[in-house]
Amino acid sequence: MQVPFSDLKTQYNLIASEIKEAIESVVKECAFINGKYVQEFEARFAKFCGAKHCIGVGNGTDALFIALKALNIGVGDEVIVPANSFVATSEAVTLTGAKVVFADCDPQTYNIDVHKIASLMTQRSKAIIPVHLYGQPADMNALQQIAHQHELKIIQDCAQAHGAEIDSKPLASFGDVLCFSFYPGKNLGAYGDAGAIVTNNDEIAHQVRMMANHGREAKYDHVFEGVNSRMDGIQGAILSVKLKYLNQWTHTRRKNAAYYDQLLKDAKGVVTPYVASNVKHVYHLYVIRTKKREELQQHLKTNGIATGIHYPIALPNLTAYRYLKYKQDDFPVASMYQHEVLSLPIYPEQTYSMIEFVCEVLRRYMRK
Image (cartoon, helix red, strand yellow):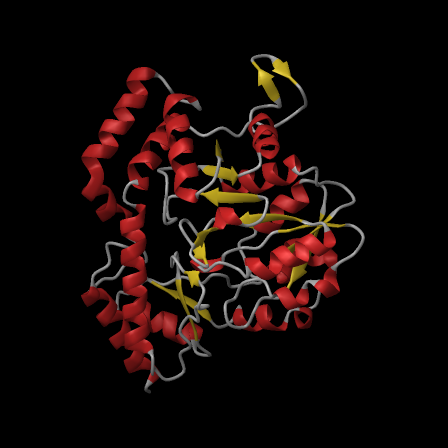
């Protein structure tokens, strides 16, 4: 049996007629950048997120950068980010001219360790970017308390957390700004690059919309210099179609994760995902840990099972951040987990028989 890491072809085939109709409508109306179809998606996604505003942008990295700029974060400021994430989270901070400050990750959830933040605070600290890693929300209740005490902004990196919840509340109930990626492999993915910024703050929404469109108030009336980061009309139309299915897809992801949990609960040498009791995990990724990561990954590949590693190098250990002079011992959890984490296939089109096959091959190898 072949088990791909994801299966966008099957997903497309299930909704192909709707996707083709959406693309054809955009082309017929020549609504290629922003326009009607982006506006429709923005309204629908804002409602899905339980927020007042959604601004479509070019990609998830732009979303983070533009949100930071809209909050007046730049040269001389510091922004705290988790040590375990994709580089876009920290990259966006540096692009503003601010300094990125890394915090180690929680040993259970892999999200930012809220207990490490106090020791990282300085007079230059202006914001925190919690990443809801793998689809599990960070401890936003604790982060909001910290932000309130120290007058910090919170920009949520929701690239892997479309539809996640805390205490049965949407993520838009917390922080100042939410940033989403719609990279094709995300839980809600476009057919190219796309992203969005979500907020309940009218002023931030206004600043973000101008910033993403060359600082423009009206045509040729530029209040400040911004950037060019606008969602394509075709992506907006595609995302509107796929958004209708997102709750169903999320439900299936969660069922598949529960089946993995059941089949792997006593697997030798394997740590399955811990999920906090008050959150809704949307399982963008199903990540296990094992000391035999490389050997197991190769064995799975030999048996036709695709896997991923998210992430093989903790952010502060990257060559890109060597100038910050961190040591791996400064981030003991992230530095250890970079050698242990392994992402198993999980997606809505995945069958139970695929999961059973993955777990049987995995368990058989780990019993050796």
